[in-house]
Length: 320
Ligand code: SAM
Ligand code: DTB
Ligand code: SF4
Figure 1 (tube, rainbow, N blue to C red):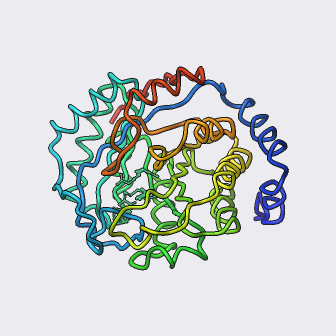
Figure 2: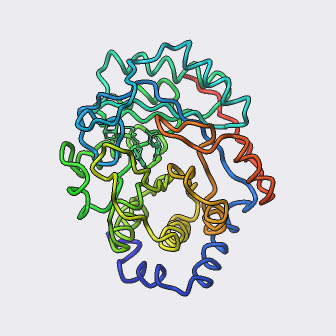
């Protein structure tokens, strides 16, 4: 099959004069979305720390001493209480994350119960549990799961500099399982890990050239966690960050592009530029999984200043 986007095409778009790039991204954004509406998701860590993988950015990896407070699998009651709070604060999607290489079947059964209960509250559901084995995506689909988050994180070429305990192919395999089970895909990456603009373009090409691109594309700015190998890496140039978002919007015009981790350190101006470039989703609430996010009051003020509204999305009832 001929790829939808070639490197030279994307490179040309990436290198446009900044005003032209922003205009092109805005044109695409307005064809498919109301530019004043932002989809809002809330995250909850349902199993924290002691992860056997060595992702160089991650506070939850057992390979690094980040001083994190570890926690075993949450109870269904704890999860439902957090989901209720998220709904009351205006979130439409509840995303549960577990620091596993991948779930064991006995753990997955409990997560499936969590999904069913959260769905009953009228929220969209998302989980991020690591690599999936055959049949596990179907179990989640039966429970009514809407989205599975599994990031490629960076380009295939740069990947080995960041993670060696799971391969890029392992990740693609899990993405295929999710797609085959008819669960929507949430897949993106992290910017600011020392990768080049070429790597950023290649990561976006992989996503946009999928038969069906991810419905949701999280773009995280690296949060430099003390104790991880990326603690002292150089900051990404903010305009390269915004360019990457604009190019993602142009290449995947109907996907939600989420301005994900890292907003806590971003100025209001950088967030506003990211929204203008086509980002139309955020994580809301003072915590991501383990790291800090802007406090709700700060986001409320930002939305007020920019005239942005939270998007209203109702989860479809499941017949599971
Ligand atoms: N263990 C599961 C996995 O890796 O698929 C799920 C949780 S993992 C924390 C989800 C994503 O969070 C990672 O793929 C990465 O993109 C993002 N993430 C983790 N730590 C981060 C950091 N310090 N800065 C930015 N993004 C981060
Ligand atoms: C994603 O791309 N970013 C979120 C979500 N998917 C699961 C997680 C960000 C984690 C940031 C570090 C932490 O909170 O531990
Ligand atoms: Fe584990 Fe996920 Fe963190 Fe990697 S990103 S160390 S797989 S929790």
